[in-house]
Amino acid sequence: MGWQEKIEKYTTGKFSIETVYSKNKDQTLIVHVEMKKNIKIPSFLKGLIQKSVLSVLLKNSTEYNYLYTGGSKLYKKRILPQIKLYPHGHKKHFNNDGKQRWIKK
Image 1: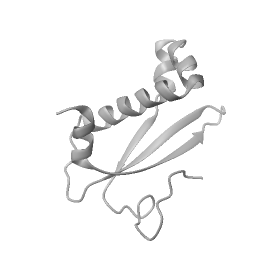
Image 2: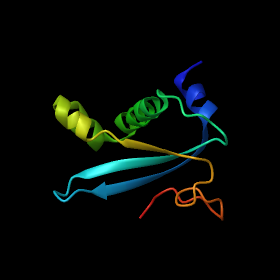
Image 3: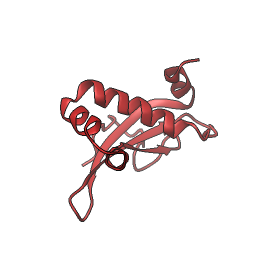
Image 4: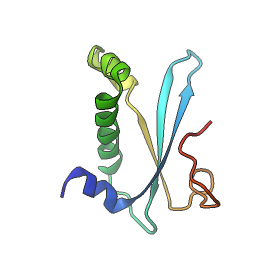
């Protein structure tokens, strides 16, 4: 079973992204991911999703690729997307009351 199948086994496929800023104006990309109903979250899942998102960013964003590949280990760790997993139908992020919002503002 490949990484994509492992992710699909536990998640609904719904996600949203959010950019937050620290007091120092540092950006963090947060990816909110909805889990399937009645699923126990395995410990490896966040890391697997993070690697998947990182792979897509490196492939599709020349700016992110430049920053990531040219950075130190500490910098690379700092700019990794953060993954947050939520139970199915979570009210704040996945309330199922209409159209899915992909970007949080």
